Length: 141
Figure (cartoon, helix red, strand yellow):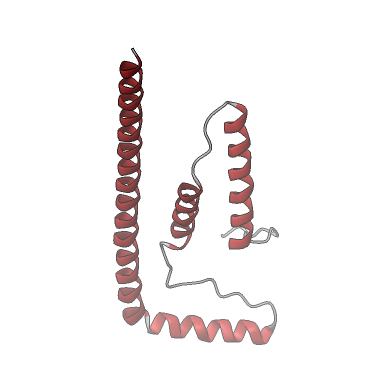
């Protein structure tokens, strides 16, 4: 027998609020430990990845719940129609989930590549600044 609870389901807005609170807590702990704050673009990318992960997998079957008798009757009809059309709906949902997974993987690869390129550019700039400092000191003598 399925167990019923009186607790309301967590909405996506609640999840977003929880994620925002966690982000701010992690940010404050990093600042307290002396770690550098990520760039605004990197923060935006991470937030986008979190949002993508929330919506990446879709389901063909949302729960149909009715509290009153007419709502229960409508839910029953919807369940019957859903079962009758399962052969049509499920392949579309599977195809969409596969596309979402491929797009997410491509975005993650692009973001990783961008991070690597940024690190390379930062290393080149640091090396160039070091060479400029060395050339500047050598010309003073």
